[in-house]
Length: 326
Image (cartoon, rainbow, N blue to C red):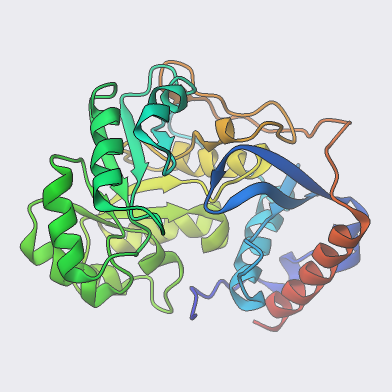
């Protein structure tokens, strides 16, 4: 799939062997299956300004994954951009769990006023989604839903009507054309995620009138400064969200949110609570907010196997070569 191309000055790219000299691969167990994952693997590495993370999902190809490496290098060798706020409001994230497990999930996000609920999970029904959203609505005042592009246009329209009042619907359909078709019919704001970060032209969503809100993720888009530049170009409301980041990657995501000139929506940056173990003390929401900070990893990290570490090393080498060629 085409992806937003991130170009960096080759002089700003550290040699690949220097990155790997201070790199480790971790395997973090999850509390709840999320995005089909029960163990989150990531490569972390130390640079001149701190730590960076390289953790594209394993199914992503090298061209797309190179953006994630660019983001990690930016964090480790440049550090965060200047902040304009001290805290960032975050939403609770509710995976596609049965309705009777919702209260347990939400208890991990004390003070959260907004919850994002995953819907359209393979193997589940619209009734499952309705029950889950209703259970969330009983406990949290503001609900947004995320279909990860799973619906066709008629199904999206039907499902949005059945799910009732929500803050917005994130990525109801897979394509920009479909998003625009849904947006013309429903009265609920539409947010775009994959249609921006996995698009050859991330501005097409705005040009097509396909969304009201842009969900931007630092690692897939190539870094904090790339996200800030894209927000300016898109000219729409923005939500910064996690790509299931470890505490190191989350530090970059929160720093990007803290640097935005305007931030009118809670951000999806509370997913650290989904890990049983993180690489460092995570960004656990308190009173519905998190605070930007620089992260140093623990000494006793849960390391991946030797075979998996070798797999990640080869992947990083290939992605570094792609960045050098851009």
